[in-house]
Image 1 (tube, rainbow, N blue to C red):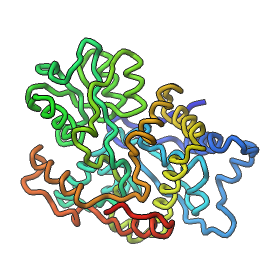
Image 2 (image 1 turned 30 degrees about the vertical axis):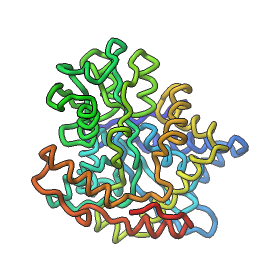
Image 3 (image 1 turned 90 degrees about the vertical axis):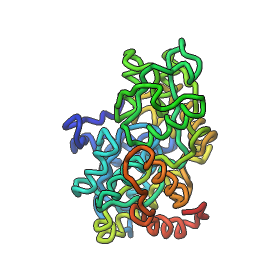
Image 4 (image 1 turned 120 degrees about the horizontal axis):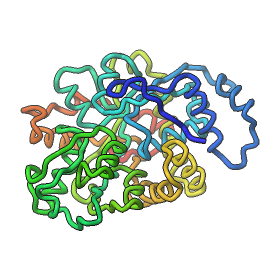
Length: 362
């Protein structure tokens, strides 16, 4: 059984129909503890109620670029019922691109969007009412995948490379990898595809000779004959994705936002527990339609190698300032905005303290 994220329009917001959301909730619940003896009927009934004594806060709508390993803690929190225990249900939709996710927040189409840091910074710098409230992936999980005929980054001179967008953080990552291997960013041409799945398709189709990919697609690419020749985090360890909200919505719905962030941190803790490895891999296989092998490799990569998810959800201001400054070089704006213009980590700091999680800096 798989989860299909059905797009209503290809380049705009996309979402699962109501039945799809119920399927997702029940599927993820079934992917939880192997010791659970609850029936489908009981699971369906529990989806409409909250834990006894917990106030029902309603629904939080969350936009994601697309299903991949970067959303693992979210999937885990749904699977293990953490959000429900905190009084909220989380409705997932697919934006297909980070800039679209930011626009959905600005238009109040969704409550929260999982976005690339650069896209929220760009919007805020242009006067958009959007802030990043918590870090999602503070270690970039990208790799550069190529056909077997290419064995080094330097061989890509004159070739075509697929990244998300000209001012997206994937462009920053590629630039760092290129320069670290003696190339200028202008030594290659670009094909822009917003999702890692689209970039993988371009690579397999021969449209490009290199693509910046996320797990589990990066591992599927390697298995299909497109190995990784560079790990981005070795060149530019900038934070990658974060959760964006409208300050007005956050202020009016503090209880919902904090419940979401608390459930998310609980999802990270669950994911990092070795006892949950098999269940976590099963969740990723079903939510991303990946192979067992790719999901298993993704677990080792995210959890054991790069520790992508900050346990306290922190978004270090010093690192985010570097991201904003680097965007000047991409032509996103002439002067980097102060972090106070695009960040508000007060909510995640409070939630982490309530959970007794030590802060790693914000």
